[in-house]
Structure formats: structure tokens, C-alpha cells
Image (tube, rainbow, N blue to C red):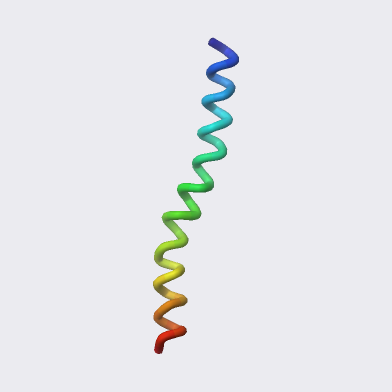
Length: 38
């Protein structure tokens, strides 16, 4: 059980930054796109 918990914690730690990048990345891409196209 402890090993499984450690693996799950590792996956969560890896996934959290990826989700952050996706959430922050979309508005950033739109912002950059607006600058480029205007």
C-alpha cells in the first residue's frame, strides 16, 4: 500500500505542473496570437 501511495503521489506531482502549463498556456497563446495577427 505504501509503495502504491508513493507512486500515486509521484504521478500527481508530475501531472500538476503539466495541468498548470496547459491552463496558463492557452491564454498565453491567444495573447501572443493577437499580437502577431494585429
